[in-house]
Amino acid sequence: MKIIETAKEMQMTAERLRLEGKTIGFVPTMGYLHEGHLALVKKARELCDIVVVSIFVNPTQFGPNEDIDKYPRDFERDKRLLDQEKTDITFFPDKKEMYPDQYFTYVQVRELEDHLCGLSRKGHFVGVTTIVTKLFNIVKPHYAVFGQKDYQQLIIIQRMVRDLNMDIEIVSFPTVREDGGLAMSSRNTYLSPEEREKGLLIYASIKRVEELFKGGERNTNSLRKEAEKILSSRDGIDIEYINISDAETLKELDYIQDKKAVLAIACRIGKTRLIDNTILTEA
Ligand code: PAF
Image (cartoon, rainbow, N blue to C red):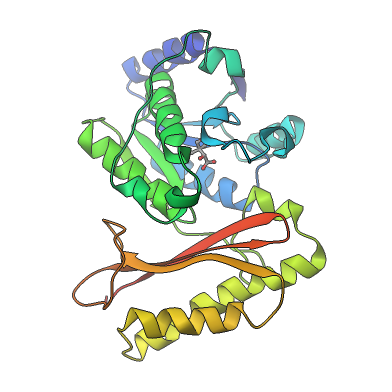
């Protein structure tokens, strides 16, 4: 596996690969990889000739109260895992490479950021769309694979690609779960065994809502209340939101009718903020 640290070298390499007729599949990450990331890498491998993974802990998507220095990092381990997956290139820039002095340009997808996580994490999605745009311009992928676990991020990136006519196919990949159903996340490493057990209630509440939806319940208030009942059954789970929204616009729904909806949950367990979601659809 080749490791590239500068934008220029990555761009030149991508250009050469494109001229050779190779398709490039891209998985952007912030490192500290887990099975969820590796599933995205496998998907990119399936679709493309060349797989590029980026590892960059992006400062512009962290809020003032979110400690970027505490974000888990282990490049040697990441490298080993990516090697095992036969990744062709890891793009591993430093902060100065991505945000040099006098950096002024940001990308914003309006409306979609005014919901769910965007409400408590002001500016987060501008940071995400800015870095993803930069990475797309540097890696020049044909396909980019994103996990459904970060549902709002996925929808915002799909919209950005559409609105800005980016010639990239965004591939969405289902959430990968640990035993018991906890959605995989680099942040899970912060959880104590007891907190992890509480985290399982998020999946339990999702399954309960799915079951009720399958049974015909369409009133979102009733569905939400059931999820809340499960999450409130133990102390120490601080619910930030339980929303049932239109799966494309992310606007909250009172009733699910002829629409694809998303149940999205965010809660804090101890110091760790966890999110999860499921799609509620007739099909
Ligand atoms: O999902 C993530 O890990 C990050 O938000 C991303 C897409 C790599 C941008 O920094």
